[in-house]
Length: 88
Image (tube, rainbow, N blue to C red; front, side):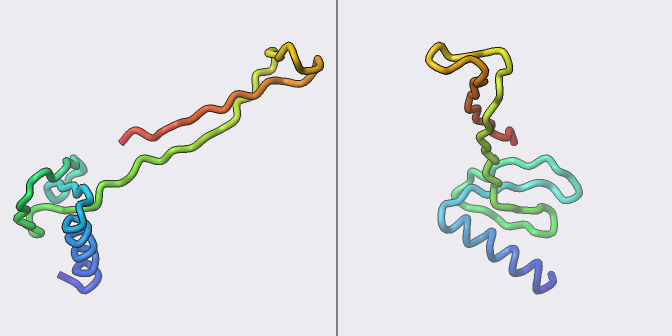
């Protein structure tokens, strides 16, 4: 294991000690699953490990061309705030 890979492994293991959810997948695949065990074997030669990524959230304002509020003067379009969350 290289120094860079060792440093990454230390970050993942420290996050697990701190209570962060860790994910694992067999090498050469992308089928990640949560590691729910209270005792992890850390088989780095057979599995890859990572800190579970947080889903990205964004808020955008959507313009509705033909919707007007009754209290606004004619010609001012209404905007609606929408929140989107990434599905992992």
